Image 1: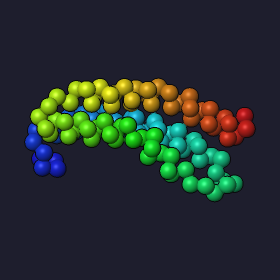
Image 2: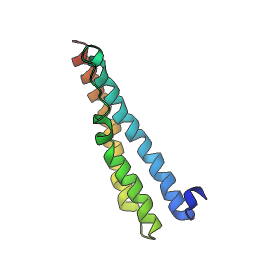
Image 3: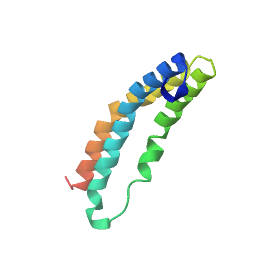
Image 4: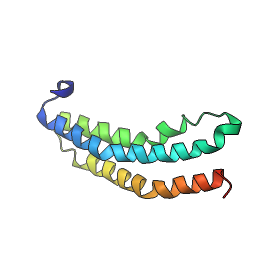
Length: 105
């Protein structure tokens, strides 16, 4: 199996990837919109993105570890789903505000 994991933890890992990928993409959209103003200043926005995507990584990996220990991963997947829901729901507004602010509109 994948990563030498037994069946149930592999399924939990797959579900956590399905839930967490949109959250990381949404956070990445905010990071990309923040780079619009960096043409003049040459600063690197890379340190901001991993800190914002941290909860998705922590809850996703935590769900896999909990499942590997034989416990229920429902709570970790629930927290990951809540973070993903909030990120996907709020990121268009944050990205639009950043673009509007950076382009002077």
